Length: 190
Image (cartoon, rainbow, N blue to C red; front, side, top):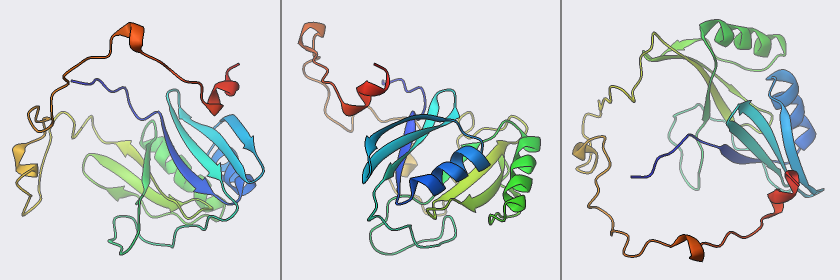
């Protein structure tokens, strides 16, 4: 079984990197920890936490997503509903809500989801963001729940990965055959 550490970064797009920096770095307080490219094709990274980043590509021709309520169904091409970012605790959630309101940024009331309390807002690119704080040590990871009134047969198989649903690896790549090729981002650490 593959062991994951977390989400390293989520990459989304903007047509105005300066507005994006003002919001994510200056309003939300996330450090701008890397950037590369040139006008018309940049990629910048903001630090959400020690091992989690959000990345923005700046593409002048990209248009913001249409406004929608998080979790509301849509039609046509679509990729991302919202990004959920956990804050340290309930006090931080309220501090962030106050900060967004003071800046004139739309933000919901605090919503009780049982295992998290959340607020929702949007960034200048109309990307829906949920900020949440865990409630009382409750976690879906430790106690999975499926409340779908009509789950698919695949969902009924349960929370654990089903090992026999994909072909097994026939040949493991030996260390002496492993090749890693340089990418553009390598310059950020050289």
